[in-house]
Length: 375
Ligand SMILES: [Mg+2]
View 1 (cartoon, protein in one colour):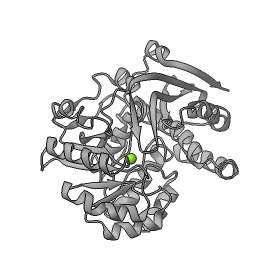
View 2 (cartoon, protein in one colour):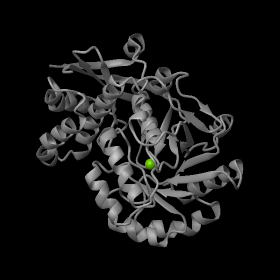
View 3 (spheres, protein in one colour):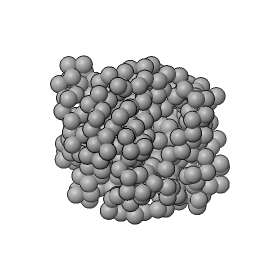
């Protein structure tokens, strides 16, 4: 089998309710889609992370189309490991010179996911069946709650059996405390409650926050510090009476191994659309497993990355819980529809070959903003 053509598409849409984090606000949703076509008729789909900044889709479409896709044209898509290495090798110096290890890893992620989709379709199996675990009921939590009206989506989530929630922090002590109080009161003492500061604090502030957070029975504290302050994270972890989670802003399995080796976290949170795709996400999960640490995939994007994340969780040992963004996202909902449902707080894994993504042309057209084709 040979790769004949790679299409990169930017899909986007405005959203009615912006998503606020301690570092910025999302008023638009994007999905950068990669479609790898082959001479056998089989095709694969992948997605690249592009939530921030708002102009990142316009960088990404060119990085994929001009920088990486030419490396794959004419190659055998079943040879994933060799192709992944080829993409990493070719961009190693460029990513430093450009100062862009993140964007490059995110671009590689899309192509890598699309290759895995083809491999599973070639075997006529759902993707997760290529790996060693077979979890088909995936526990899920609702994330990205707050800072305004942090409880407004909770009843809707509880109606689907979800009893684990994650609140955004880092909006000042008064707002953070008020939100913690409201949410814990509504979900009750037994529900899982996680908090995410999105890198808002320094080490001292994080240490000061321990006594504030403790009464709310926090299951994990996520990214309290800048994502590259690994040594400080390891120090903080020693002091925490609850678990420390991070990993969404690490851009290779190689870096993740060093990060884990420093004893910086209790729960690994790689993002399949940021770390380098399914190949490196699997690698990170195996690294965590070797240290007896669970993983909880980070994910806040469109349909294809969501399906990739779900299959990874289903096929890999050591998964703790999956992230489900409860906010409006037509680029996930319109494409997934009834394919993935939450039943009794668990996601069901699609049983179609590959990722199970339904590449409906008219739906893609509805959101299409730009498209480039290689060669
Ligand atoms: Mg986070």
